[in-house]
Length: 498
Image (cartoon, rainbow, N blue to C red; front, side, top):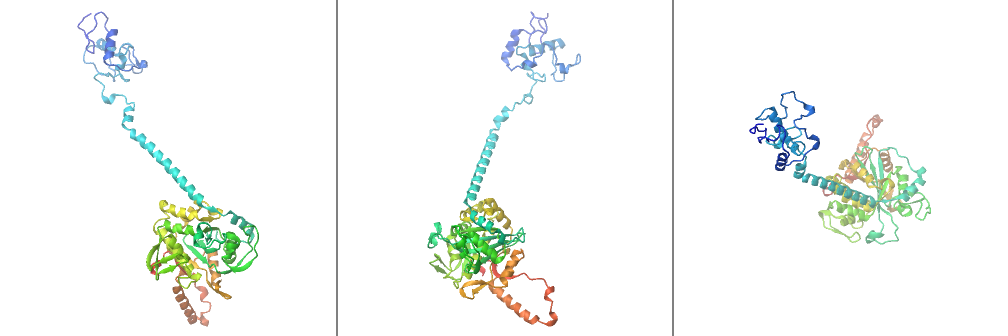
């Protein structure tokens, strides 16, 4: 055998072995120089081809790099020496049969993803961090929800008593409208004892407002019921399960005699309006709500110095905090004529300014700003079972957030001094009954300032006197019924421009 013959890899052939055989030691030596892992499943027999891709005789496989010297036999010998006979030579070939020496590029190396994982560890940490933040946010949100939800006190006793007297209660006329009775408690017990003498926990309703939400939620009307209004109070159950007698007395006695349920039944008998829900708020709840919106701005024509209300304020424009606001809406003897009617008007205007502040500052649309308001409100809030959850209150607030401020109206039920006692009030008829009918049937009402209403009434009387002619009889029936107008204010009114 010719000793000058070389294999395709350029190594001299062994004279002691026939062509096509590779010495064991040489194969081992090459393996030591270029070690690679071997897949025993892919070790070809010397000179064998892949059965899946058998080339025609004399053809060069597409995936094999052409050899630059030697005939087929020599090329086979070179391939055998590269591939070996199962002792490590096979690891010089890729899965596609390409030679790893001199023919394979970096792009041809198998990609197992380890390098990519080493280069992007931040992705895993970011995913873990995001998951952690989501868990923390969800936990915090749930905690806040449960905290607010737990603040609310449910008045189950009122619901039970109202159920007993269900047959005598009025039926709803417009199903989607809502009538909510808001009761401001003047109890001096607990945290409220600093505002007066604690007489054993008894309480009367300091402020009572009938809030009517229109079915289309395009208007809200708040009607104040004077505490000194003379009304018929039905038989009511007391806290010790006794029954009071039916009596004609001042309105706020109902709360003292039979609590919330007795007050609701008294209002329903007076107005013929079915009360859907009720809320009782004490002094501290009102204070905290004002503080939660960073105060409410008012204007005073004269300075105030009222020791009973613990209030001392200069004249002019100023922003009241919670404590000052409470004194302002409760003050009576040193402001104006000292009447309860004037105090109710002041309360209405202040509540309108509070609503305007909440809507203009986006409180109702901003969960971050809404939370302190809800926290303040729920801490001192007692409601019926239909409004005793945060979800119920949120749905109520959300239904009101699109009501225009000029359609959030405040007024006092038409009243006048009681004939037998000028220190008490009585309803003005038929004006009061007309107002209750409009609300019961979910029809609109309008409010204007008291002085403007007097001017309109004077013009109306003058017009009637001029138009009273025989040939005009029946003309009024063809004209549309005007919207009843009452003395009051709206949340859009600026307290400093009045």
